[in-house]
Figure 1: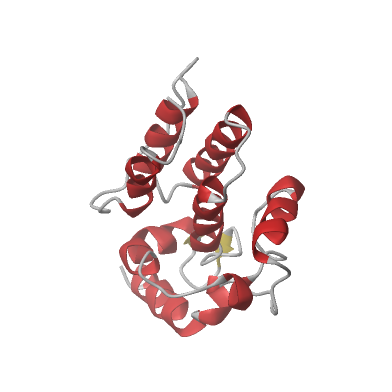
Figure 2: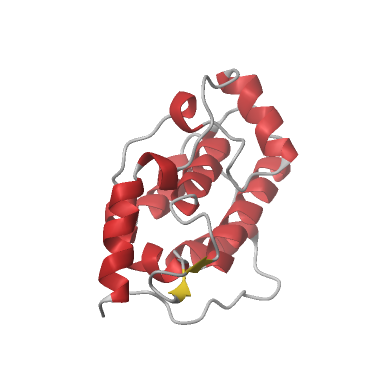
Length: 165
């Protein structure tokens, strides 16, 4: 299945899936098509491997389709921005991997406001092809940041909650 104007919303809805419980282990499905790979990865968010695999699948879908739109890029960007809520791999305050903090905060993180001009790309986990295409579609951003920086007090509050549990 490829992404086109008719099914783009169906694929995009997976980025807004209701977060209920962390899938304890992320398992890649061997020889899966890219749409299946994407669905599988999105169900395992916010595990780090799920972010990575989601973006890889979206890049492959974009390449397969020789996409001339920014549909997949918007999804890749959204994932990279969400992932930027935790910029360090380990939280000294909570004494745990920082994705544990993202796990607790994920439902709220998905609702935080951001845009290309306030977050940019410099500090996000994007590859050079993503960045080049995003600049081509959206222009050079006016600022570069992360959700961690923009919503640092929120991050710290979740970090304290994790530390106190």
